[in-house]
Image (cartoon, rainbow, N blue to C red):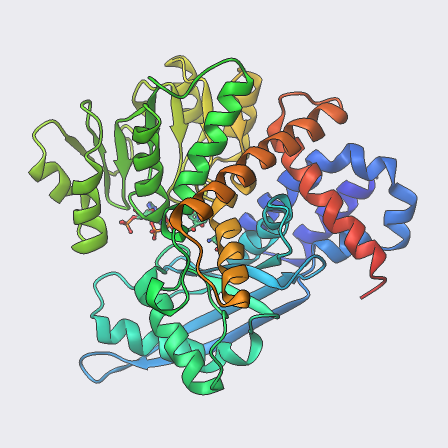
Length: 448
Ligand code: NDP
Ligand code: 2IT
């Protein structure tokens, strides 16, 4: 059996009931076959793959907090410190009822290669909890965040592990977590990113993931002889990534016509009104039915079994920006039938493996999340740099660096795909380019 297959089997056997983690491992290792086979003897001797699929450290802890009725609630907290070969662990904190150790491990594993692709010195990690911020009062969210940090603080630090936002964790949650870290440690340091501008946050971090997604999409189209301007775009999600993807798409002359949340989706043929969307989602924390109610051109479809999905709309470009496994084979078929030319992932692993293969087989340019959404973590690393030098850069400076990083990422993965005989396969290109740097650093640092 090949080394890759042995390690995939080992992961499935040793990590039962973690389907998302298995999926992420398979997607990465399958596309590394050619690189692994070329170095098989050394990698086997050093158990490089067995080490890279095993987190360096996994922390699971109890998070008790008191709700507004005086009732104690108990959630589970996670931090997976996956790989520190090229820098301190770096990655977001997801707060969503679906969170479990398998999901945090899939996200942490992806983060290793994504962070490597940014070209910046950051290792891979991820954390979260099954706490649901939706419908909670600000005081309840604060109580949860403080309790979460009461344990997490001992495992993190500006040079050790630097968490940030993800689903359910935005500026409010980062603020409460930062305050509690500072209270306990009595250190004012850049231990979290995505902070508010008044206490060490970076300009453009809020926009960075969505903007970065559009910068790499535009570069990819340009290099394939096309142009983002004038294209119709389907976006899923209505959170941090989706909102700023929609905003930048409009700035680049494209027309985003959809967005979605956990209960339904909007088709707005006149183009999404991004200020209205921000008001509904960022300020009111309401459902998209409120967007539909305020906008005569918008059609709302409730999410339910058998109903058409956001991917049924005829568009040139699809940008899934909500969550994992939200674009299935049927959706991929609908996109292809409607002439969609590109799918670029704003979310982490939003496209199932079958859907990815179908899109690629049908000539759709496909840029995977670990490249396409890397602008968020890259700008987090820029926030770390600013914190270290105790300076703040202008919006234009950060945004300019972000654009350069995204353009470089595209060329790195494009070149890697070409070098290994898989031209146009950006999944393979991203995995190979991300892996080689980490593998080299791990090899140089010995068996640790
Ligand atoms: P937010 O919490 O801001 O928004 C998430 C959006 O997706 C919301 O509209 C939410 O709906 C919807 N959503 C979440 N979970 C589900 C689900 N299970 N089913 C259907 N819809 C869902 O998160 P972000 O925008 O920050 O994150 C979106 C994706 O992008 C995630 O995959 C994340 O890991 C990834 N990502 C985020 C980065 C960042 O910087 N924030 C960086 C790189 C990747 P509702 O409004 O109803 O809650
Ligand atoms: O998935 C991701 O890259 C993020 N949620 C952002 C992580 C970060 O450290 O900014």
